[in-house]
Image (cartoon, rainbow, N blue to C red; front, top):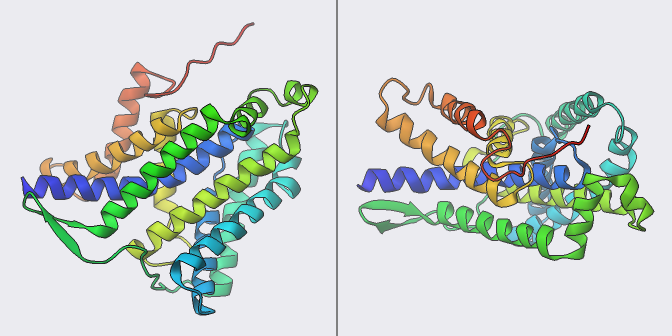
Length: 293
């Protein structure tokens, strides 16, 4: 029983990291209708910015907050001067642009800070507490609760606030939103800024677990994209639940399914994704899209 609880808690913690990136992807999708493949690179850059602020003597919470603020501004700038040139055009071109941005950011981070592993401190205590025979780390619990709180706030943002509703309207039909008087350009910048800020949170959460490197979120980004498809790109709650499900099932399968083990556990989320999409192509919590022809 203790082993099972330990695997579930660790899976929820790792799934929370996938969820942070998935939520950032959902924000961009909800505000612009695009999938940002550079989200992992932007989160890594935020981690390095926080690391630089720590080197200047700022306390860890202030260093992370400063990185979040700068990431918001950088996300808005990227949308205004790069992504906006591809919006409304061929979606494949926009995808290539975000992949190119990912490569550029990763290269710049490696050039400035090198490709060596850097130690990044955690916001949460490193020790653990006992629970039903398992040793639960405060870091895992803190990561889980942080993402749960962000999920609730984002759901309220998109469902209950004028800004969130405006972001959704712009994503659905930018032309009609412009005719309705909405500041489409500013809203697009806000959407990308929010996504970059959330990516900064993901970077701060994952860096203490994996150590800070330019490619530390490459694997997590794949899982995050799987969570977006599995949970539904229109549902912040859905992608978080899907990311938690992926993290937990991956851990359990690695231990309790002999032929999978730790070597093949990466296949677990994609098998789950295949099964769910056969039943609900829009994802577990996504909305069906009706197109009139």
